[in-house]
Figure 1 (cartoon, rainbow, N blue to C red):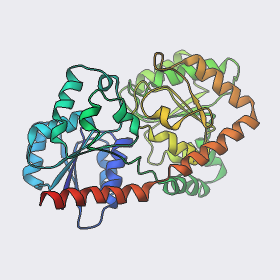
Figure 2 (cartoon, rainbow, N blue to C red):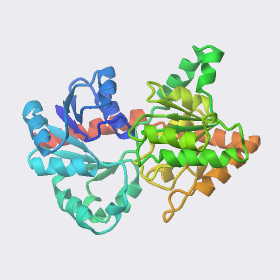
Figure 3 (cartoon, one colour):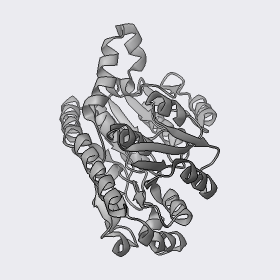
Figure 4 (cartoon, helix red, strand yellow):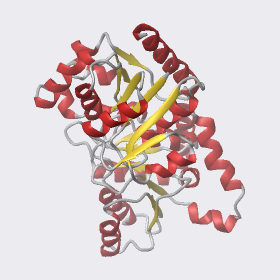
Length: 362
């Protein structure tokens, strides 16, 4: 059996992590090939020894060519746009539409939601991490019989080992470079809202002069972020360390993870940080509201005002000043990550879906 995985993102994030985890966890008789734009994601693909096709841009032409080359039995398309492109290209190959987010356009009638809804008949299966993605969709009646809620393939043990064991092999002086009060992990793009993280640090500095923050990630807004740090006089408070091979060391050595995103899919970084017992303060978008609450941190925003700077600053400063409350949230965060440790079950379910589709269509 051959499964062609299709994603249009050229960077490595939570969604691509799920795709790679699926490909590398399947038995040998299920061959996975990843169609992706060339970019930083290729480093991860090569590291994981994943077979892939790199193109300048994933569009219908590239998908057609990949189908001719790979001759897949199943296509697994990640997120709405890729699912639609695949459905336009073939009506003979079973398509799995794998969704991770619930953007506003999905939840109301409009050109994009009508288009996706009209193509739902072309999808053999629709996979989502949480039930709310299906329930909130305007086209929910068209997908409810095809949808399957699988959660996410989160391996807490593997994440912990990468962050903890690597740190134990370092000298105390070297490990000091990874420590922080506040941590930002993500691509420096508009969706991840790195400017807001810097401004949150600036506000917290007014009461916590020595607050330390680290920003892990690269992207188009890197120079602008550095300029803002300098303009606000935060050179001694905020360090930008760029893309990191192992960001989990930073997670293990911080106190609080801060996610001020304006858009998120599932938001895997929340669970990754919780694995190390780190409270998470996050905006009210995407899957963040499914993993973050007052027990493990705080959602700092509302549906009408997803990013509430005042709530971020108030919640973070309270936690920095209250060790008892910090410890309570830390223990709850570690338990949340443990409860979400469902990688093995997820892979079994994924294999079952593949085999059911393959046997039905052969």
